[in-house]
Image (cartoon, rainbow, N blue to C red; front, side, top):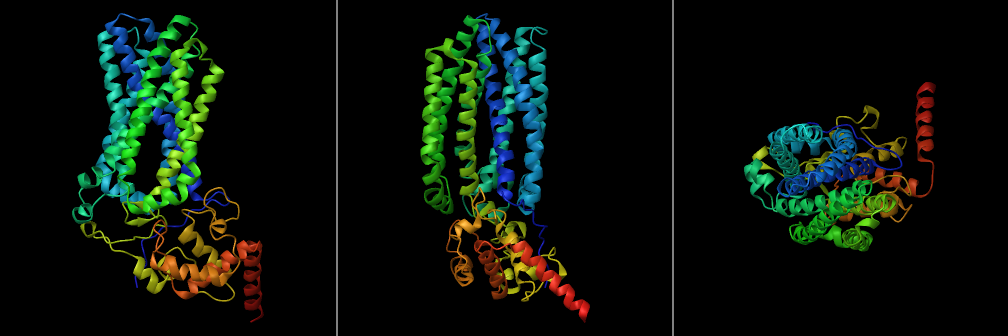
Length: 468
């Protein structure tokens, strides 16, 4: 019996694993989408400045560029590696699956990102130091490199939702993985959103421009770009919904739209009204108002959108073949990958996971709670927080705080064992492991200090061995 290629389980008490990735990811998306959208705003504004001989627009581009260097490229450069750290420790097999499929795509993206970073510095610091035509070419090169980074990342993100057909499982081809059914819809949605974010941030920067005439002209140019971007984003999002797998549709209708649907509509309406107001009354775009609108759209717009996108692909984390709890869910003949669900059902996680302590590889009355805590973390903690009242999908709440161990065990031996919950992984475990998980969750739901009970059990074992 061979152990599985599993990794140690990463869990943050109180908030759960998903919040760590989610918070870092949302900050990164705000910064990255702003930078990509701003690169095209720069190109459009500079093209106008060049063709209509309006050199004052370059003053705004430089001001926005310096803001972008501080806001997007410093924050983005910090949160980018932060995402890598968070997903590597939280979902190591998922990251491995992506790297084995997209190693050269990621390498290409890093090349474009290098061009992008060099480009933004050159764009800002070469204004007035090279001839206008050369600088315009540089700006457009920067814009295209920025969008290329988004395009390549979207190909990877969309594969995380699903390949869209069985073809990739048989070929293992990078192109079959990259150009999946979800790719163009997500690329269009994000491209529209990047113009909205860039326009909202642009209005913030414009509010600090002292030249009233320049401010008016810039706002009148920026606001329509954001409006068109929002319209494109909504249309492409509607198309995006038609490219989702069944499990995503069920999750969306059952859990996400009831919570976030009205909020997302509200954000769209407020953003549209803000951009229309800015175009109509550019002199009224005050800094305090611009900052408030930026924070509102970033917090109440980007967070729900990213939360929905991440949640909709559940129970999978990559390509509908790796569960969120790192278990391989189906065969991938082209990659020589075999499903592990049946093997776990036969032998249990305790026997197959190499990082289980030797003293916990079998369930006894003395260690049942400790084993239950360990198994719950391995099987559930990637998507759920385990403490009552946790902010993101806390498991006690999902079980309605039941402290009936038999009822929890029946749920695990029914819907979870047979995989009838579309957005939950199939968790098929031996009876003793199910009993341990059910006992642990029942104790947590009953409000017991489980950690203290586990320590007491450990001490009793130590004392018993000492007496012998």
